[in-house]
Image (tube, rainbow, N blue to C red; front, side, top):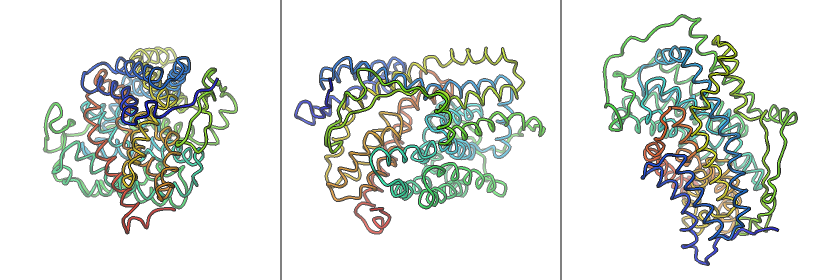
Length: 553
């Protein structure tokens, strides 16, 4: 028995949209305003989504339950599996003392907290976004920043802000490749279009990041370094996306940016060092401009031992991201389980698709090819390099699991909520509300991508969800389909910092449990402001010369 999605069950888009928004509003209000623990807030949002899906949208209760279960399984693998193993590696490095040596070596490059942010949160994070995505960059960079002495809010919030511009080409181009494959875009054309939108924001985000941390005056004190960081990322991002393809955009841009910044800092340092690890007016203390304190020096052998686990991690993550290697591992073991009572039984309907088509629901247990498995193996190899005994490794793994147990539960509930909204059609109702904006569609269509990522936690999922709608709406309004397909992905990257799973990853990496609401409140303004700027930029590309010259037909 099939069930067709209905996007306006009450014959009134205002009422339908208000009902569709209830689950998200319940979860965000519980987190951001009522300070309810994240796993409880996620459970409340999931319950609200079940009630809206069944009683307002008419979704069969059995299907709704199976959709939530399917999302929960996705929360465990790949997302939860990544979080568990990256925290495991971090715990090993901290207990071994090598993490402190790594921190000292980073301080040796620069003791200025603003420059450390550029190097770690933006450059290093972009590399991990390009290689793995799915929460890995926030987990790694937030963990390093908290170890360097950054306050929990700074480490969490700023890692989330930094993890924006690279997201559209994350995990070796997965969001763009999926957009083209699922909705029939030309891969190179839509890649090139994204590559003509995001470089501007790759230049802007480093400035925004330092402004959010230290304020305008402190930002201007290091503007040469910020400019070097942004330009050396934006230029390769444009060139690779327009002339090579989506797979290596972030990795190449991140390596060039990191190398350029480190080289620049050998010849330039700010006149005054910002040595406070906390944000202006946000926590602990204010700006402390003073002379640098001596940095602990370590022998070459100790530095090599401290960095080796993280080099191993980078290598494993890069290898696990290679499509051919993933395909090989999936050939060895990747059983697929169609979700009985859900798979191909829900029909998506126009205007989301041209003709009704069934929605697949197949859970693939791709444990071998999952990024988290590469991280787990790299952690085990790194543990042996750090001279841990096998039983110590096992003991630390179980203690890490206990440490992050509530975070894993939260991720499961968040993904259950996001998946249920997708299969019930409530997220499409919200998208259609944006699509009915007429001449303002380039702006609101961009915000549709932002909404998709904020709800699903994934630029890939947002492209699957709204990519077809963007194409149909663009053709009806006489706009370039590639422009709006790219806008969905480019706007989506700014939703990454407020999606619930990313916030949970950040709070887990910094061990700032039960403060997810604080992180959400801090990053929300930055998310909506940057998304609006992307929307304005896309609007200029749609209607205004000379921006329109950049549009791929």
